[in-house]
Figure 1 (spheres, rainbow, N blue to C red):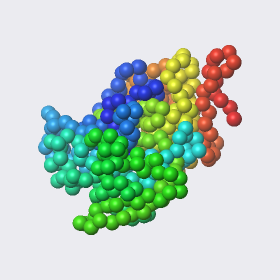
Figure 2: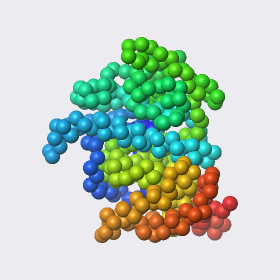
Figure 3: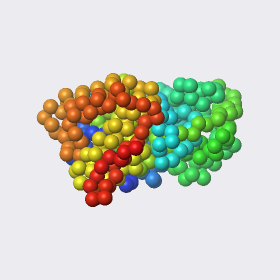
Figure 4: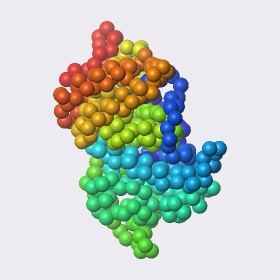
Length: 358
């Protein structure tokens, strides 16, 4: 999993939530104070890959204690999103446009934050001048091989952190560069990660898993928002907080991942875009089912959003109403099978959109 800066908009921006173009949905969410963005891929290409752009001072209405707690809250969100990402990427194996090596780890590095935040990061997280293991996917390759949260990273694949950062022109996104180094590991090749633990250097050898290359981007933002580009999925911290369980969080991520699998593009009429959203709902709920989440519980999030939208401000013609979406999804749940089956919207011979059949 990764964090993100504000440059997410390559080819199109498909959204889980209906909203008019350019109108950011900002329902109040009691989330950790946003410090920039958190990434899952490279900002230069649209989304990012595991680094943190931070920053904002204590503001009116926020106590100093709340300001100090934000790193801990953010770390918890990073770990939560990473676990959902791992399971969905696994469920989508063979469906995504690309594959990548993954070991189930979240890195963090203070260079992605403004220097004014470094003392708080040191006191709350122990984050010093080296990137660290911030979270591990339970049962993932990194955890099984012996990596531990808090390990300081010295080298990956025999290359020092500084050498990797320089070669990949990482700038402050050093943690993301390390994940990219792992992602490009050749199939079936072991990768050695050198860590410093309690003053001693240790070499940990890991066999990465190859699955869907799409990543989840945690966007540090109080708004309730989720969208995707051609490569990655962005989810706001506000939405992570709104999701009462991982079934609901997976529901959002699964829908956006479905857009990537379907290779959806912005454009076309309202009818085509609504069909694209319907298809993403259908594949998305199949993905979360195959990832081991409770599909029925996940769809509850849409019902809660419907109750918040009592004036209908969040409706847009590209999406069905929340109640209709819930109704459709509940009807599909009994027939879900694995692996999930993509049904992208294609143009028929007359140029009008239709759902692709098997």
